[in-house]
Image: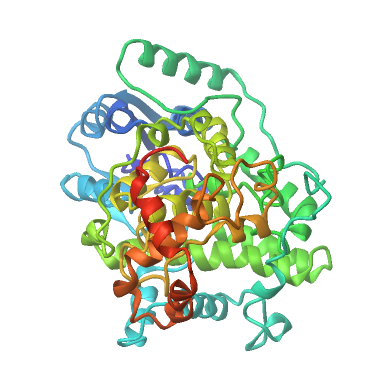
Length: 502
């Protein structure tokens, strides 16, 4: 009898299966465990809990008699039910907590991770080759492109440029409420989704678990077939328009030209290699321009791989980094996704998107949600936990570097070269969110002072000494000296609660 193979809930694609003794087709028996304790530990977004359970149960139905599917209180209990003291294998889990669990069990053999382009050994060799230099994403991205022959013409990057960001920073069209693109793939719910929703309703009524946000209808793929359909639709109908406005925001078009494939990748339904390969094929066949394809490849083969590797490279202590000494708690309105309590239109709009869908694209995450938390001095560990719980694609490995490093600058520059925050002028330039707002992006003080503009300058003043040695911040910090209303601004911000809804 072949040793069973344990699949976690984010290892659901065929590339996570282990071959059995009969052949190479991934035919070993499978164990899957639905552990209720996971949902009790955190108040997840209801749509996220639904998606994960739906994806797991759909996968179990596909595997049929080959799988032993156990619903238990904990993973340990479920494993005992499934195999007793018998041996199992498992692909390297995606979180330190899960790795600690499987490593503590003598009956579990941990196999190398799957679902990523770069192995740990290859990353370590690249990092050691950098010596004392910072492990910057741009250097890593170019190395991945070379190693995997992605968008390369021989030994040179396609189009003679590694980075086409300068073509991909256009604001939204000034006269349109949407980009007018074909919509993204939307799945149809089925009996499995009905069962999941009934279970979640019952557990919530019984006080077993508690959620935030709105559930339903399911917006993201829960099966390999759905994920492949979503990938095909993105590449054929949306990728061509992705690049130029990938950083733009429209109130009535939250999806813009984005792929919505992050949850499928992070559930293991898609492999990153197939995503970047199909995108490159679209460019080589003339179906998508290079700047759009390069922008997408950069997200998947560059940033996603970089974040995965840094999560393990930096170690568990990275979680406790707090270089700016931010300790304010997250306010109740933010924790509860109470968008109706917010006056600032940009934040209200984005928080509504999170509440209703469990998703926004990367710029609202960084420059609206993350920027507000950074300006207000909220505890970075709490902010990280919030992003982990409230986004359908949020996992520990994803959110820890993204939030602690990039969004909250809590690592002091290990990952990024400067804090990513801005005043209202950036939001105004890159969106249509400021027009009907009660605040004005150009006002720093007074009743109509934009909370992002005032918050930006107050943040810089508060951390001027800490940031003084950062060359990329020198010109920005000098701008404080040109503000004739700085004293009034600081008095105004000092009188405002940092946890009150703006």
